[in-house]
View 1 (tube, rainbow, N blue to C red):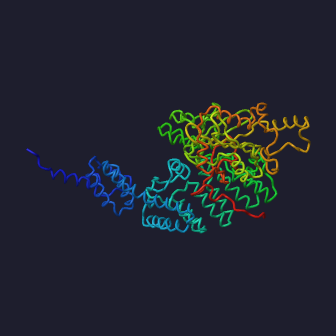
View 2: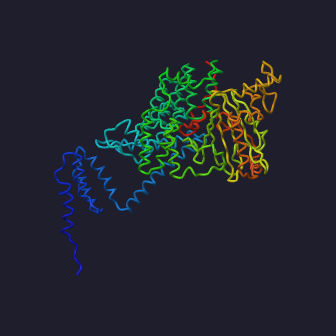
View 3: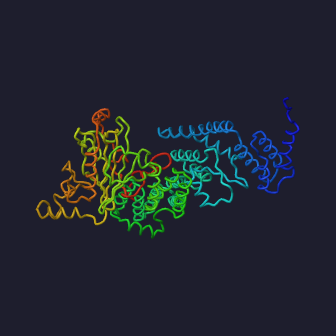
Length: 626
């Protein structure tokens, strides 16, 4: 015979929830209250709902009632069946999609130059979130504090550096991102004071995001308040966790130093920035100092830069706290099997410090996860070891390095889309004309040729030299490899005793009467003898001397080209691609890899990004000398 429902037992369960684990007499502390509530929770979701409802009523007017209510909500969600959790997740995803759509639409308006439309899109959203918070959404209580953090590195950094005395919880609304984008649009509209207010609100949600401090500094720069701008840059320093951001920090302070008339300090800051990330911006600013104020620091050496920074009490390298955090997180993440996080931390640590232990950990993690087996679309010599790409580099890019007694080289390989998407056209004469229009006075052309192979011309390359702390040779190659279109970008620097090739070849040619003491016949453009300006190619840089100086960076650069030519199965698609592109040449797009991308070889990093676009605040308008 079927048993009747035991209504008495059910009633006892309900009363137990109210009078047993959650007694009618309230607990004296939040901890005691939650312990009593947790003791009554079971696998029965319906029962747990009643427990939470009774507890909410009991502690409604308690001094810690808000905290109890929030924690009960979290406990209820944790004990919910999977189908309920899925429904909640769907609602949350839909809400997230709403905000993502607003941000994407705003960014699209900005890209199209429609600042007013961007503002009309983002400002109501920012005000909606502000109003929600003012009405109590994620309001801090006596137990918890709420933040909008970007990943575990920021979470650990906040707890380690700021040491909040409450439990840190993450919000589910995108306060920081919406406020940040809103401030970026206001910046573009020239409404700097309003932008700063929204950025300060963003900092309240994420006080360890260096990017927000940078944006505050940029707004103060536009207001002409460079002292305050520098203060905001300095506030960002403790939260910089990548080489790219550290390079941007030095560049930001360098701009402020120029405006304050401290030109040697500015040059030292720009040169130091290039230890951590490549940037044509840094070189152009050093040249601006020379041209506008007649102070030439183009030959400033690293030791001199560091001494200048030390005198100004400016640190060289990352914060000790950041190094400690990244090191500890890399090891802990590896122990817990979170290899993505471990690789990110170890990679950032190595790029910031060049510490050999960090590099070994990074390489071991790559091997352990099989990521070191990813095949480059272009075959390189074995001497080129895989290293971490810069955080700002695209995911499909692969970075390699090679070092010798007299040279250091960084090479970046990237797949290119099919079709006319490259920077170069197929005609070297078009390339020559294109890159010359982008040269700075400290740069000169060495070669611009087709990559001739047994099957015909399958690519085009340039070699450009730049005067930095010495001479750097920059290679840019676009080719049609068997795996598809690809680019190779290389940076080659002389190490150790420098200038030997130049001195020895000069002495030989001088004794042969081919050049005179006035350097007549020593320097020349390889394709146009009428060009006399710029950092011209000299006679020692001719290919015929490579075999005599195999470790010279230019010889190493050409040896890499020869290896690529001989060890890659190329396909005859370049000409067809060029025809589709209309035989176009480089139109002077900055940062394309052809010119102006001088860097400190052996150091990581990538082009700077600020806010929504690459270097959107860093490019200096044309100015007259003071």
